[in-house]
Image (tube, rainbow, N blue to C red; front, side, top):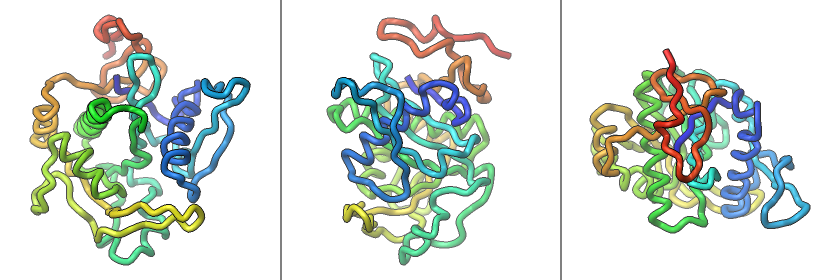
Length: 264
């Protein structure tokens, strides 16, 4: 299932730490990220190291209460995909000098608008097979559209690897042919971004914009072969407009319809 939760609600239980631990595994352990983030120890036991606690990752944008997480859970109620979503009304990642100082990376002025949001810290469990990864990334892209359409958001910005655009958005049904009316468009040049501390290179990175429209959403749903919504919130979370509310995260054999809460 896909859950949307505000940061301020994620802080009420272990959700915030679980998100941070997943991100540490993905970005710090697998991708060797070292700059622009804070590493801290959670209160969650490490299943692979008895007696040890999991480490987690966070950055300055996780302190924004209005930011939300899209969280994908597998049938065992474990996180297998994540996106952070925030309005450009507030300071956001692409505004940082690090990105502005990369020649040609961003073209023009960056927007400040409640109708333009930024997606960051996006990824899925690297230990999944290709079929599982495509399922999760498809659900994440669907969540982009569902949340945006219900909240009057017309575009989403982000820094992304060029290959990810094709695998993440293209395979999910978005148009990326290089035309002016494509769903996904570059906002600048494609560059290699070097992490000065770790020496790791994020090759073929680009600032990009995803256009939100009912037509694009329909293409995504057709490509995924479904007409079902994927995005839910929980009873203890902030209630987002038009998004169904569950009493809790379902177990493997439970039906989501049995857990729905009637709201006004």
